[in-house]
Length: 290
Ligand SMILES: Cc1ncc(C[n+]2csc(CCOP(=O)(O)OP(=O)(O)O)c2C)c(N)n1
Ligand SMILES: [Mg+2]
Image (cartoon, rainbow, N blue to C red):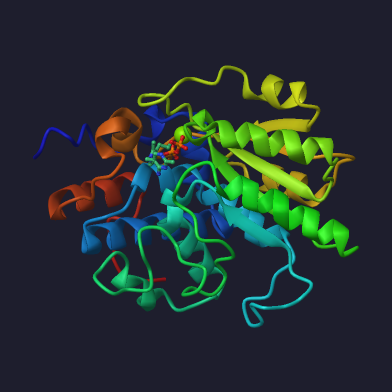
């Protein structure tokens, strides 16, 4: 056993947030299946950013369960727009889009391979449901601000949503975008801030809620693994820019990732590690697609 795997899954020792999402049926089991498939595809491809992805599964699930969109009519002119600003979570985004019926799971098996449409960062011209090509941190939020402004100018009821990272928010362009959005009082823009405290390679942003409030945004802070809480806030509009500070666990669901966050940022598991990780999320029995 490689020492990168720490110990076997012990639900009693996990934080209550982690343990809660691993119990129950319905949405909870859908999120477990999404995690299972991300692990499977990361192993297949040799790529992944798995902890980054596991941090935002419930957020992405809540977004696609709440915004206006239609997987059978991807160009629907009344749809809301979501931009994944922390673009290295592309595999999580693809997985949630597959879960919501944008494409078949089996298409994702080519993720990260030569000439695949499913790149490690998503391309909006290649994948249905991807509205912006992202991956260079600090840019997606600016696109979302522009999209929200365009909706206002065209007197549209459509809304724009974006998901940004705490490490990403070391980029000054994030705060420039917030400044512009709040000055324009873009009440059709919701920013979700993935507060997974991943400051090992960046500067820590202490108390992000206060930062956003300082800019004049309307801020709500919640558990980023609580789908109901996120969905409720996604649906509610504010008078100005709305920011949801989502407190998350980077690698949520796998103790190994939580404890070895930095080492796992980009690596993919080998066969032995994969079976340990599947066991940690409670899916040791099967690698079949949902
Ligand atoms: C402009 C830019 N600089 C650096 C990188 C390299 N990079 C990829 S992920 C990452 C850390 C991002 O942290 P965070 O936004 O908190 O995402 P997390 O992995 O925690 O989900 C960095 C610096 C990048 N993709 N883009
Ligand atoms: Mg982070």
